[in-house]
Amino acid sequence: MIEIKFEYENNRAAAYDSKKFIGESTISPSEKFWIIDHTDVNKSYSGQGIGKKLIHSIVEEARKKGVKILPLCPYAKHEFENNKEYQDIIY
Image (cartoon, rainbow, N blue to C red; front, side):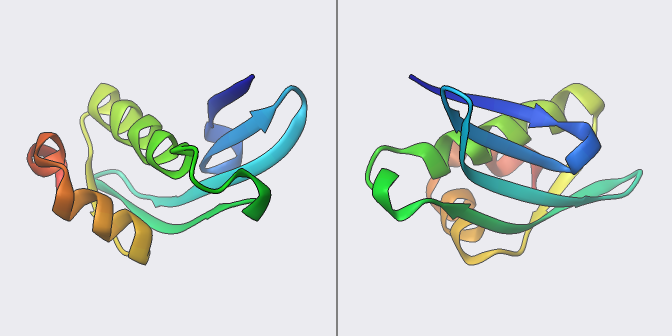
């Protein structure tokens, strides 16, 4: 089963298959906003929506912290452009 964890100590949302690391979306945080700068999922897990779940995890954590997001990585930009529920959190 795929599990998504937000790891503050690593500035990322990470995906695991059991205990095997299979992907991440990383952030560069500041007090006012977080930059999503990289998203990558192991190719053997493509097409399972893991990238979307990683971005969603970051969005949920940012909302809890009251910070906005600047999506700079191409995948994050695409997700923000195509998901209206993320418009409130764009920096």
